[in-house]
Image 1: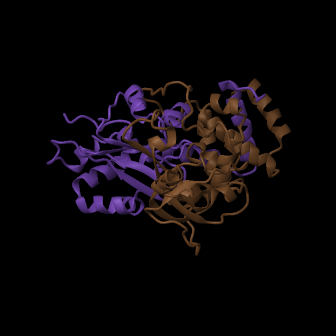
Image 2: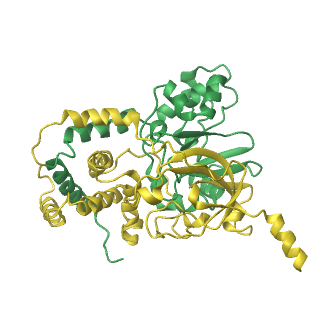
Length: 241
Length: 199
């Protein structure tokens, strides 16, 4: 989907502010939100692509103005409600309660050795999105390619600033879960992933681009088409002039 | 765009409400929450990436393996996991300077750098770094990349996780790995800053 989360090249959002040092988690509530990604993933709320799409669906003004980990709250709520695991009315009631009683305790509960074991195991093991597939790669390193202009309404990683742009494939990584299906609940459908190099001038126009630089962006096979080399187009044009 | 931005108090209450429901469903426990937080506060952070870099500086064979397959090379040092299942290291040279970003969300190589700093996730960095990287480095990080050095910005749009192998500073030829580790800053592995100055 086209949205404000797709930030590359957005002007006017202000300077990058870099504090001298900061803790890993700032307010205490961030410590409760961070684990929701891994634990709700384990509980079947979402895959990582869906998790991202839940964040993309946040009201754009809220997205830009809210602290980062609040985005995670929104996506957990989105999928919790969608799957019938969270009753929004109950969530609102409890929110009012904790707003009035911020020091009230959480529900009594037992430790869960299996959940703890999951945490200890998943941190070093991770969950790779790489998948075996017999799909044939349509492109190879060195190919000149163009990103197609499609603007799908669901989840995609086709950032707007690379749509329609021409670049060169510099790496081929093998086959990975396809976010355009997985992020929309339509299955993994692994596709080849490539890194494409775009010159700054190609992305922003020579008059507006920093010199001597390029952007490297990862794309899935269906995002691409082979590009007509520039000199061929120019020659043809010249012949008709 | 009708929703309103919550205050810190409202977010804290919302989170506690959500946490209480997830605890009752057995999705979370405070014990598991505390452990996961402890791991990323104290165990997994840029000190791990620094060890990899220091080793690569001293050991050309390891460096070659790291550049060939960063994921496997890091495993030799017991470094692996979430949000770094498939990693690529980008070597800075006299003619190339690399920078990482995730313009669509906030992808970052957790096993070697820990969780990202807030500025990395904020809209400002994500908006500007692909369009005017030299300016961002100069103005926000007080770090100038010479004009003749090519700037490559890696937008982490897939599940590949990129990070930067900074250049070894001159004058450290006889340094031990432990001494070198202290030179490797988090920012040098993101590509927004230099390694620490050699005393």
